[in-house]
Amino acid sequence: AFSCQHLRLPCPPPPTPPHLSSSPFQPSSPPFAMSFRSPLLNAAFPIASVSEKADAAIQRTEEKVKEALPQNVAPTGAGLYARFALAGAICCAVTHGALTPVDVVKTRIQLEPEVYNKGMIGSFKQVVQTEGAGALLTGFGPTFAGYFLQGAFKFGGYEFWKKQAIDYFGIEKARENRTAIYLGSSAIAEFFADIALCPLEATRIRLVSQPTFATGLVSGFTKILSQEGAGALYAGFGPILFKQVPYTMAKFGVYEKVFESAIKGYGKPKEQIAPGTLSALNLGSGLIAGFAAAIISQPADTLLSKINKTKAAPGEGVTSRLVKMAGQLGVRGLFGGMTTRLVMIGTLTAGQFAIYGEIKRVLGATGGVEIAK
Image 1 (cartoon, one colour):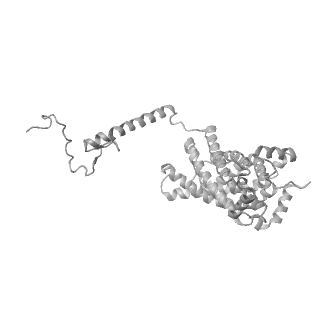
Image 2: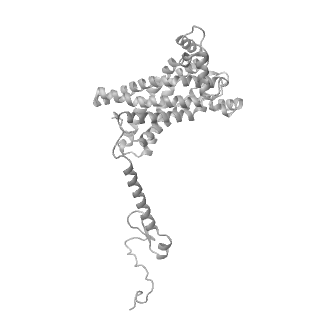
Image 3: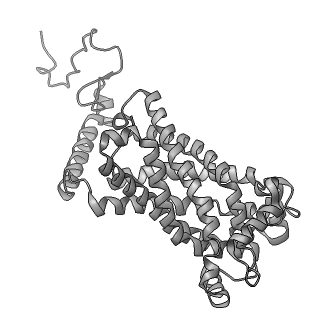
C-alpha cells in the first residue's frame, strides 16, 4: 500500500481520539494556547503561537518590573504615614470638590430658608434659574484646597494616633478597647485638621453666601484677612470643632464597626478578599457611617454657616453669637437642609473610604496595625 509520503502529497493530521474532546478545538497547555484540527484553520489563525508569544512577552515585562522595583520593602515610619496622609488628602479633596454643587444648595437652604424652601431639587432649580449653572460651583477652590489639607491631617493623623494608642496599651488591651481608641484617635486628628481647614471654610461660606464678595479663593481669603483681620478667618473655629469632631468620631467609629461586621459576614480574612469586593465593602460601610455622622453634626453645621455669613457686632464674642443664633433658629432651624446633607455626607463618606482604601493599596501603605476582632 502506498502512503501519502510515497506519493509526495500533504498528509492529513492524525485523527483525534474520541475520548479527548468533541470540540473543534483541541486544548493544550498553557491555557488559551490551543490548536485547530483543521490545517487550514491552523494556518489562518495561528492561536497557539500567538498566545505563547504573548505569554512570554508578559512574563518578560513582569520580570523587568520586578527587577526595577525594590522587593518586599513595605513603607514604614514617616514614609508610611505620608502615604496615609496623601491618600486621605486625595479622597477628601476629590469627594468634597465633586459635591460642591450639593454643598452650595445646602448652604443656601441653611442661610435663606425663607427663599430656598422647595427641597433639594427645587432649590437646585432656583439657583440655576436666578444665577446660572456656574453658581453651583461657587467656592470650589477653597473647598478643594481646604479639604485636601484637612484630609491629610484627618486620615494620616487618625492612623498615627491609633498606632500611638496601640503602642501605649498593647495590642491585646487595645483590641478589647478598640471603640474607645477609634473615637479618641479620630477626635485628636480632627482637632489638628480643623486648624488647617477653618480659614478656607470661612472663605468658602463667604463666597457662597455673598456671591459678589470676591471672585475666588485667593481674592476672598485676602479680602477677609485685610478687612476683618485673621480673627475673622477663625471666627468659626469653635463651631467647626463642634461640628467636625463629633462628625469624625462617628465617621471612623461607625465605619470601623460596620466594616468589621461586613468582613465577618463575608466569611474570609481581609487579606484573602479581592480588591473589588473590598471596595464594595468600603462603600457600604462608609455610606452607613456617613448617615450617622451627618445626623450628629447637623446642628453645628448650620451654626457654622450662620456665623460665617456676617460680621460680628462690636464687642460680641463667638460663644454669645452661637447661643443667640441657636435660640433664634430652634430645633427645626438647626436641622434645616438635613435631607440634602444626608445625601451629600452619605455619598462623600462612602466615596472617601473607597478611594482611601484603593490609594493605600496602590501605594503599598498596608502596614497599619489592625485591632478589629
